[in-house]
Amino acid sequence: SSGINAEWPLRPGAPKHNNMVFDSHFHKDWQRYVRTWFNQAGKKKRRRTKRLEKAAAIAPRPVAGLLRPVVHCQTIRYNARVRTGRGFTLDELKAAGVNRKQALSIGIAVDHRRKNRSQESLQANVLRLKEYKSKLIIFPRKASKPKKGDSTQAELEVATQMTGPIQPIKQVWSDTKARVITDEEKKQSAFQTLRMNRANVKLIGVREKRAKEAAEDDGLGSKKKKK
Image 1 (spheres, rainbow, N blue to C red):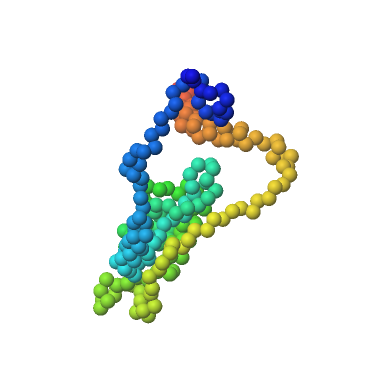
Image 2 (cartoon, rainbow, N blue to C red):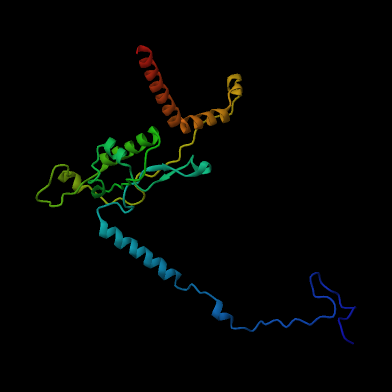
């Protein structure tokens, strides 16, 4: 008889009705589609060897590379966190007493595009630069002819190559606790304050132009009256 036997119990999701029986192809060349990773241990050893070679090539400079500034993360979701940035601004270098052309030669990254949006970030990075300068040991280009600013021979003898991050960044969280909202805060509107400040910034040019034109009109009117 054709069709599926009614006495045979069907599992959920199994084919029903008088259909073709599936011919599953399980004997394909599956080894062509398998990625092996037998060289994992060898690559790990090669990466470690490369790190040691790089550290030896840049010695006695720090293994981590250049000193980076502390910047806040982007977007309102992450801007409470801080991370390392691309480089220090020119204002930060000037406030810390570091020459912008000399900065890279002593291991300080420079980013001429970044701007300081607050006094707090400027002060934090200036203190970071000053701390770095206090611990910095500068080797002379010629040991027989040390220049002004180079470290002394006693400091050079105790100098060792630094491993790990340079001045690691620590996350600082505020200790603000929940409290009851005051009556004065209830009367104020944060939304209205932001809208008014935004409008004032947007209309500052138009208002200055109107004030200037009004002053000129008043000046012309006073001259006509005198005549």
